[in-house]
Amino acid sequence: KEGVRRELAATAREKEVVRRKLAVTAREKEVVRKKLAVTAEKLRGAYKTLEKKVPERTKSLELARVKEEAILLSIGVGLLVTDEKGNVILINKTAEKLLGQKSKEVVGKTFSEAISLEDEGGMFVPLEKHPVSMVLKTEAPVTQDNVVSSYYYVRKDKTKFPVAITATPVILNGKLIGTIK
Image (cartoon, rainbow, N blue to C red):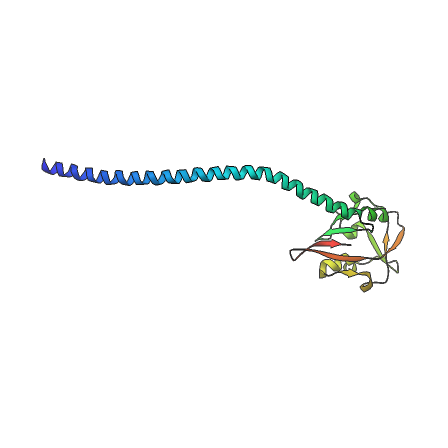
Protein backbone atom coordinates (compact mmCIF):
# COMPACT_ATOMS: atom_id res chain seq x y z
CA LYS A 1 0.00 0.00 0.00
CA GLU A 2 2.80 2.37 0.88
CA GLY A 3 4.40 1.88 -2.55
CA VAL A 4 1.10 2.60 -4.28
CA ARG A 5 0.60 5.68 -2.06
CA ARG A 6 4.08 6.99 -3.02
CA GLU A 7 3.39 6.41 -6.71
CA LEU A 8 0.06 8.23 -6.40
CA ALA A 9 1.75 11.10 -4.52
CA ALA A 10 4.48 11.31 -7.18
CA THR A 11 1.84 11.24 -9.93
CA ALA A 12 -0.11 13.95 -8.10
CA ARG A 13 3.03 16.12 -7.88
CA GLU A 14 3.73 15.59 -11.59
CA LYS A 15 0.14 16.48 -12.43
CA GLU A 16 0.40 19.59 -10.24
CA VAL A 17 3.55 20.66 -12.13
CA VAL A 18 1.77 20.04 -15.43
CA ARG A 19 -1.32 21.93 -14.14
CA ARG A 20 0.85 24.93 -13.15
CA LYS A 21 2.60 24.91 -16.54
CA LEU A 22 -0.78 24.74 -18.25
CA ALA A 23 -2.02 27.63 -16.09
CA VAL A 24 1.06 29.70 -17.06
CA THR A 25 0.52 28.80 -20.73
CA ALA A 26 -3.16 29.74 -20.43
CA ARG A 27 -2.23 33.16 -18.93
CA GLU A 28 0.35 33.70 -21.71
CA LYS A 29 -2.24 32.77 -24.32
CA GLU A 30 -4.71 35.20 -22.76
CA VAL A 31 -2.11 37.99 -22.88
CA VAL A 32 -1.41 37.19 -26.55
CA ARG A 33 -5.15 37.01 -27.30
CA LYS A 34 -5.68 40.46 -25.72
CA LYS A 35 -2.74 41.90 -27.69
CA LEU A 36 -4.15 40.38 -30.88
CA ALA A 37 -7.56 41.85 -30.11
CA VAL A 38 -5.98 45.31 -29.63
CA THR A 39 -3.98 44.92 -32.85
CA ALA A 40 -7.07 43.75 -34.74
CA GLU A 41 -8.98 46.80 -33.51
CA LYS A 42 -6.14 49.09 -34.60
CA LEU A 43 -6.10 47.38 -38.01
CA ARG A 44 -9.86 47.83 -38.36
CA GLY A 45 -9.44 51.53 -37.59
CA ALA A 46 -6.55 51.85 -40.05
CA TYR A 47 -8.57 50.00 -42.70
CA LYS A 48 -11.53 52.36 -42.23
CA THR A 49 -9.19 55.34 -42.52
CA LEU A 50 -7.63 53.89 -45.69
CA GLU A 51 -11.07 53.18 -47.14
CA LYS A 52 -11.76 56.90 -46.82
CA LYS A 53 -8.33 58.10 -47.95
CA VAL A 54 -7.88 55.86 -51.02
CA PRO A 55 -10.84 57.29 -52.99
CA GLU A 56 -9.86 60.82 -51.95
CA ARG A 57 -6.24 60.27 -53.04
CA THR A 58 -7.33 58.55 -56.24
CA LYS A 59 -9.59 61.48 -57.06
CA SER A 60 -6.79 63.93 -56.29
CA LEU A 61 -4.31 62.04 -58.51
CA GLU A 62 -6.85 61.78 -61.33
CA LEU A 63 -7.55 65.50 -61.10
CA ALA A 64 -3.81 66.26 -61.27
CA ARG A 65 -3.43 63.93 -64.28
CA VAL A 66 -6.39 65.51 -66.09
CA LYS A 67 -5.04 68.98 -65.35
CA GLU A 68 -1.56 68.11 -66.67
CA GLU A 69 -3.05 66.51 -69.76
CA ALA A 70 -5.26 69.58 -70.36
CA ILE A 71 -2.16 71.79 -70.17
CA LEU A 72 -0.26 69.60 -72.65
CA LEU A 73 -3.22 69.45 -75.02
CA SER A 74 -3.64 73.24 -74.88
CA ILE A 75 -0.06 74.21 -75.72
CA GLY A 76 0.03 76.41 -78.83
CA VAL A 77 2.69 74.36 -80.64
CA GLY A 78 2.25 70.89 -82.07
CA LEU A 79 3.18 68.34 -79.45
CA LEU A 80 3.67 64.59 -79.77
CA VAL A 81 4.48 62.41 -76.74
CA THR A 82 5.78 58.85 -77.01
CA ASP A 83 6.50 56.08 -74.54
CA GLU A 84 9.94 54.48 -74.19
CA LYS A 85 9.28 52.26 -77.23
CA GLY A 86 8.33 55.16 -79.49
CA ASN A 87 4.58 54.53 -79.39
CA VAL A 88 2.52 57.73 -79.50
CA ILE A 89 0.67 58.22 -76.22
CA LEU A 90 -0.51 61.80 -76.68
CA ILE A 91 -0.91 64.34 -79.45
CA ASN A 92 -2.25 67.82 -78.71
CA LYS A 93 -4.93 69.77 -80.58
CA THR A 94 -2.41 71.97 -82.39
CA ALA A 95 -0.59 68.92 -83.76
CA GLU A 96 -3.92 67.39 -84.79
CA LYS A 97 -4.76 70.51 -86.81
CA LEU A 98 -1.29 70.76 -88.36
CA LEU A 99 -1.18 67.09 -89.34
CA GLY A 100 -4.82 66.70 -90.33
CA GLN A 101 -5.13 63.67 -88.06
CA LYS A 102 -7.14 63.06 -84.92
CA SER A 103 -5.62 61.72 -81.73
CA LYS A 104 -7.45 58.39 -82.13
CA GLU A 105 -5.76 57.89 -85.52
CA VAL A 106 -2.28 58.41 -84.10
CA VAL A 107 -2.23 57.22 -80.47
CA GLY A 108 -0.97 53.65 -80.12
CA LYS A 109 1.05 53.74 -83.35
CA THR A 110 4.78 54.19 -83.46
CA PHE A 111 5.83 57.75 -84.22
CA SER A 112 7.18 56.68 -87.63
CA GLU A 113 3.88 55.00 -88.58
CA ALA A 114 1.81 57.91 -87.33
CA ILE A 115 3.52 60.80 -89.07
CA SER A 116 5.67 60.94 -92.19
CA LEU A 117 8.78 63.09 -91.92
CA GLU A 118 10.80 64.23 -94.94
CA ASP A 119 14.06 66.12 -95.27
CA GLU A 120 14.67 69.19 -97.46
CA GLY A 121 15.25 66.92 -100.49
CA GLY A 122 11.81 65.31 -100.20
CA MET A 123 13.27 62.02 -98.93
CA PHE A 124 11.66 60.25 -96.01
CA VAL A 125 13.86 60.53 -92.94
CA PRO A 126 15.22 57.05 -92.13
CA LEU A 127 14.10 55.65 -88.80
CA GLU A 128 17.61 55.77 -87.30
CA LYS A 129 17.91 59.48 -88.19
CA HIS A 130 14.47 60.44 -86.95
CA PRO A 131 14.74 62.80 -83.94
CA VAL A 132 12.58 60.56 -81.72
CA SER A 133 14.74 57.50 -82.55
CA MET A 134 17.85 59.48 -81.76
CA VAL A 135 16.45 60.60 -78.40
CA LEU A 136 15.37 57.06 -77.52
CA LYS A 137 18.86 55.82 -78.38
CA THR A 138 20.97 58.56 -76.78
CA GLU A 139 18.62 59.89 -74.09
CA ALA A 140 19.79 63.36 -75.13
CA PRO A 141 17.72 66.19 -76.66
CA VAL A 142 17.82 66.54 -80.43
CA THR A 143 17.19 69.83 -82.18
CA GLN A 144 16.83 70.46 -85.85
CA ASP A 145 20.05 72.49 -85.86
CA ASN A 146 22.17 69.44 -85.09
CA VAL A 147 20.43 67.09 -87.56
CA VAL A 148 19.37 68.65 -90.89
CA SER A 149 18.54 72.10 -92.18
CA SER A 150 14.84 71.48 -92.87
CA TYR A 151 12.16 68.98 -91.98
CA TYR A 152 8.72 68.62 -93.52
CA TYR A 153 5.75 66.78 -92.16
CA VAL A 154 3.46 65.09 -94.62
CA ARG A 155 -0.21 65.52 -93.76
CA LYS A 156 -2.84 62.88 -94.15
CA ASP A 157 -3.90 64.55 -97.44
CA LYS A 158 -0.23 64.31 -98.66
CA THR A 159 0.41 68.06 -98.46
CA LYS A 160 3.65 69.06 -96.75
CA PHE A 161 4.61 71.80 -94.38
CA PRO A 162 7.97 72.82 -92.88
CA VAL A 163 8.58 72.24 -89.18
CA ALA A 164 11.18 73.10 -86.58
CA ILE A 165 11.64 70.02 -84.42
CA THR A 166 12.96 69.65 -80.93
CA ALA A 167 12.76 66.19 -79.42
CA THR A 168 13.58 65.69 -75.76
CA PRO A 169 13.75 62.68 -73.47
CA VAL A 170 11.31 62.26 -70.61
CA ILE A 171 13.25 60.91 -67.64
CA LEU A 172 11.61 59.66 -64.45
CA ASN A 173 13.70 58.40 -61.53
CA GLY A 174 16.74 58.25 -63.79
CA LYS A 175 14.98 56.09 -66.38
CA LEU A 176 13.90 57.07 -69.90
CA ILE A 177 10.12 56.71 -70.08
CA GLY A 178 9.47 58.44 -73.40
CA THR A 179 9.96 61.51 -75.55
CA ILE A 180 8.28 64.81 -76.29
CA LYS A 181 8.54 66.22 -79.82
